[in-house]
Length: 108
Image (cartoon, rainbow, N blue to C red; front, side):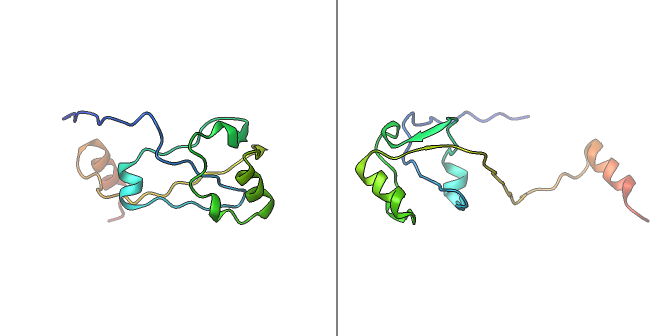
């Protein structure tokens, strides 16, 4: 196996987003492939804990939340959430033990 050297990763995020319940965020193309992304593990989201503010503040559709974000006093306890990831596989494994096993399972 050939290893490739890792890339330098910025310690400070480029942006932070607020995703309200029933929100959908789709990352694709170079944004998905070239930028690290994740969900910080915390029990409460507090605008005071978000340095640089919220990048999508003007897109928040809830007027009460938007007022709180603009005033700098918005806080919300997190509930259960569901995250789905769909990926497009570029390559299919052929050959090797897995390939032979899969070939053996095919109908004649």
